[in-house]
Amino acid sequence: MNINLTLIAQSISFALFILFTVKFVWPPLMKAIEDRQKQIADGLAAGERGKQQLEASGRRANEEIGKARERAAEIVAHAEQRATQMIEAAKGAAKEEGNREKAAAKAEIEQEASRAREALREQVAALVVSGAEKILQREVNAQAHADLLTQLKQEL
Image (tube, rainbow, N blue to C red):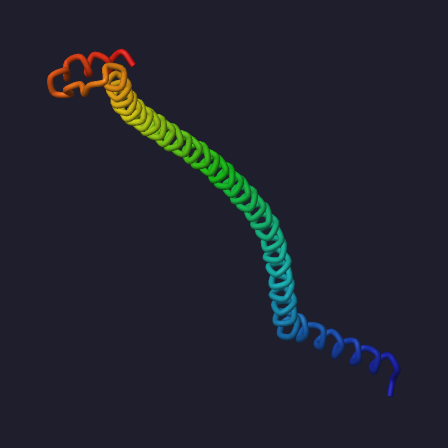
């Protein structure tokens, strides 16, 4: 056997092997590699989109939390304002009620004072009649002198 012939036969069989590999084996391998690369690229893109969406969601959540805090602060401020108004209204109502009770008490005191004055006038008139009776040593007729006694009461 000749080395040249063996070398040429090996070269031809290697060339046929390469041709077979390029024709039948290489395309499915390249397709699988390309599919895998595409899948990896899609996964990385989806991961990046997910990261961006997560950041956007975080920002939106923070904005919503901020809005909720502002709303809660408004509600608390409104409640405090309402409580202050209610306290002021209650104070005003209590003051008005106190003034009404004070006026009623004054009116009652005035009425009692008038009654006491009237009773005192009656007693003084009776004492005057009694004193005049003793002075005159006779009984004064109260019915006959009613006008005089009424005038005397008015003066007292």
